[in-house]
View 1 (cartoon, rainbow, N blue to C red):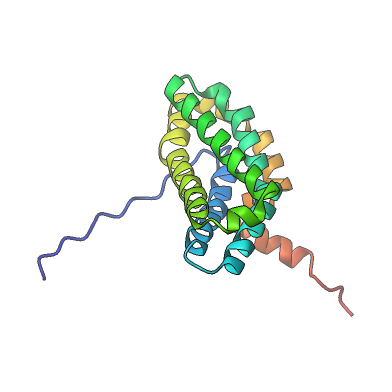
View 2: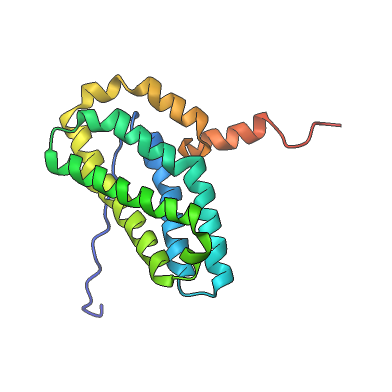
Length: 180
């Protein structure tokens, strides 16, 4: 033994079924946050591609994800600090996404802007998972049960919200090419 201590692993967070689709979408968000941060260190073509990819995922998933969190979970949050932080960070990310849409070349030309967007998205998702979702689960498990229908709609409408086994099953149920 070298005497070095190994950091304790963080156990997986258990999610109420109503939060699971939103939590699964966080994985995609974390991947895009990493891509944005990494692209900041690359050439302008790579940064432009990262901005375009972010806009695509923003429009397909993240924008709706934010709306759903505010519509479904914010009413369950009694802590004013948690409510304010969620809304402030969503506003800041919406503003940056708007700039990515309207000024993609300017954003791609500014590595610091990509780093800032990637870091804010990463930190926001980690905070939601570790603090916000945990508080909602702890304070309102019965209210979350009433959101299972909405969670099912999210899961049905946005592929990133689906459980992995369901994505695999969908591929088996609907092959890309019809049988000969």
